[in-house]
Each structure stands twice: as structure tokens, then as C-alpha cells.
Length: 225
Picture 1 (cartoon, rainbow, N blue to C red):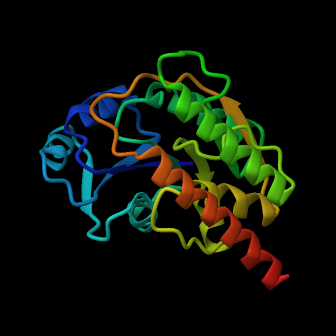
Picture 2: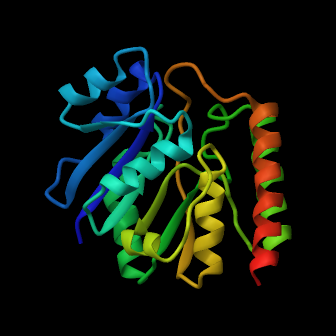
């Protein structure tokens, strides 16, 4: 099975090279797609020089960028990474092998428990824990990290679920809808590194939005059922 790697990127000039250089050079990886989400720096230029396929998404938002990457992907398996070098791109083949050996449809890479305590500050840890607990409570799940940006899944599942969020909540929406649709899902702990470059995340703003999206998703599912 061939792998497509999808990396949403917004002004990640300082992190994109480090992110791409971690990824193994192997024929199993069909393509590396960097989705340039209106960057004003040299993110796209650096990614192109390092051999990535760069596509542009003009709708601003993490979710819109991911969905554009999903549409572009031609591989059987999609792996998502952030462009800030925090996720272990060097372990892509290892986690894909875990997915295949265990006959999974979706493998979520959980950052918790943190192996490097300096990779997330206390506020971010608390926010992530709260959102994961809320998702588990609302949907009866046992997620360890609902907000992880490193996900490995078979592309075919995208035909069975309808993704709506255009921003950060897409990550939790994808996981929740995959599980509720009955696909084989598991989580694996990964190392998580300190960020390269400045964060674009505003903890309170994004925390409130992600919470509201969880409640909206729950309401929509109740309405459908």
C-alpha cells in the first residue's frame, strides 16, 4: 500500500525543512503534499526545494488545508503531520506497519503521556486533556488524544464520512466520525518535540471554538439518529 503524507502549512518557514527532512526516503511513500494555506513567508519555496508537492488552499484554516490535501492524495494510506517539526516524521514507516499488521483503518498518534515535558506547556496540556475528556464523555469513547495532528488512515474511509470543519476541530471530527462509523481504530504513543517557529494557536480562542464544535457535532449526530 502506497503512502501519501499531507502537511498543512501556514507561515512555517522555520519548521517545514526540519519536518520534511525527518521523513524517510522510501518508495513506499508515494508523495509528500504540503498544503500552503496563504503563507506570506518562504514556506512554499522551501517545501518545493526539498521535493514536496506544494498545493495552495486559499480558504484560511487548518481543516480546509487538510481537506485540500486529502483531495489531492493518491495513496492508499494517508499520514498527516504538522509543519512545525513536533511530530516524529522519522517514525512514519513504523506506525504504518503497526496499522497494517493490526488490520486497522485508522491509527491515532497520541502525544500523551508526554515523553518530552518541554514540548507542551501546562496550559496546552490542560486544554488538550479537557477536550479529550469532553469528547469521550459526549460520544462514549476512550480516546487518549483527540487533538493529535499525526493520524494514519486508509484513504477509503473518507468516502464514508462527511468532514465539515474548516479549522482546528477537523482533527477531532475525523477521529470521532471514524469511530462512530465502525472503522477499526487504535492509538499509539509517540514522541512529541518542542516546536520550530512561533505557534499560531491562541489557546483560549481555539479551545472555545473546539468545545463548541464538539457540542455542535453531538447535536447533529443526535438529530440524524
